[in-house]
Image 1: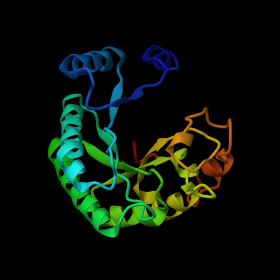
Image 2: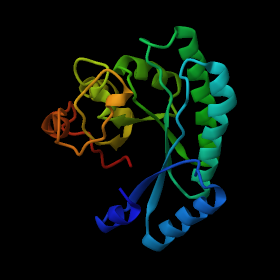
Image 3: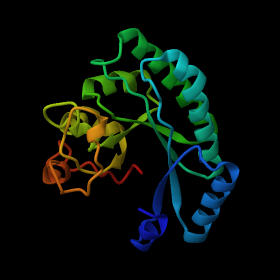
Image 4: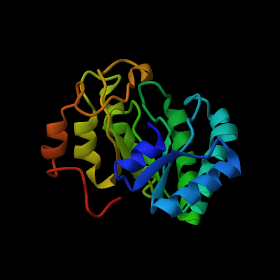
Length: 215
């Protein structure tokens, strides 16, 4: 979907990929657009690559996340969402421990730069996300309800909401058919397929997950 279509629908918050692939020129263009249209920009960080390779994460992913945070700060973006899979079904315990240590460093950078960082659920169940968030209290959670439909028999979103409601500050709303891998992450229009949207909006433990005190 082009930026013009989004703006025509009246949206005032735009989530963009950071760091900008076009470098300083693209960053400048985003800043100018935000100023002209009265937009709030929020960031989505880079993919982590191999989620089980701590050496690669240290040398390639972390520098990109720091660059994304610095760019978000320059763009006055209040939030950067990152992928950092901590699913104990796929990732060894020592690797998860190392990744949580990295998340602590990322959270420290975020506080120094004035940009909040959110961890986005990928294939994790609520218990795995909870372990990471308890260790790094500065992090919040981006709940991606499409990702919650994947690699499990039932959506993990209900239990994530039940256990981590107070840490959810951002939502990614999209639909899919379910499936066994990220290849099934179809990003369909909400309501087109399997997600039980009525429950999500009206039946959560706190009578809805849209909170007035969070962005």
